[in-house]
Image (cartoon, rainbow, N blue to C red; front, side, top):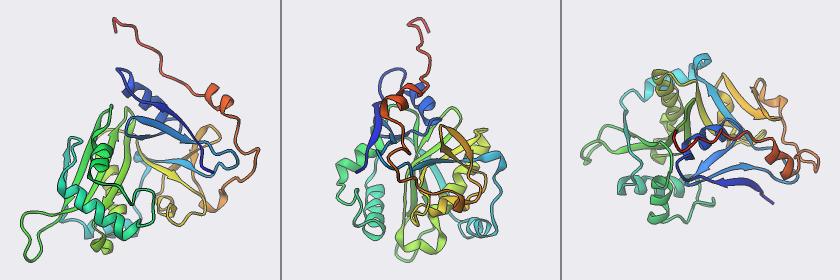
Length: 253
């Protein structure tokens, strides 16, 4: 049974609250911040890349070369029909039985547009093929901007372009964006030991995970395992007591 610790994200202090809690393993979904807190499992570990220490592997360098013709376009968080059509193709091909499989255009627009913090939509376009016009969308990432990094909230891509490894490419490009902006981290969401779907995150060196209340280098992924025990998760009251909140600003501030 999945259980989450969550809080609403709204008001003038939303950005500061988001920045503070993201450093403690929380993620954003529209106007809610959440962190897994299952009663008998502590397997979901928040992950981020240390930008300054990241060095692409040989495979990742090949991906960067193969995607050289893609163009990046950063826009405001506004949903478009092209984005939704790509999103539906992606879900149907990759996650047809997932929790988002039934999302309609209105729910998609809410996912993109309902954000109380600094958010961007990063679009990647490709050269037109036979019979196409302009530059069709190849991939899209909904990205939050923190005081210490970029957070890839959700990404999707053209399922017909699997040979380009667009999911990996999007992460590599976000590392480049963060480096250009002087931001130290790229947040990737949750890594789960032993999960094949989450395994790609461990292929990025300089990866850190939030474990035991602290960020620590991932090291060898096989050294970590999902804790499945009633005592592996502290009671909710203790978890809440340890959360560091941003100091409240006065009205004058």
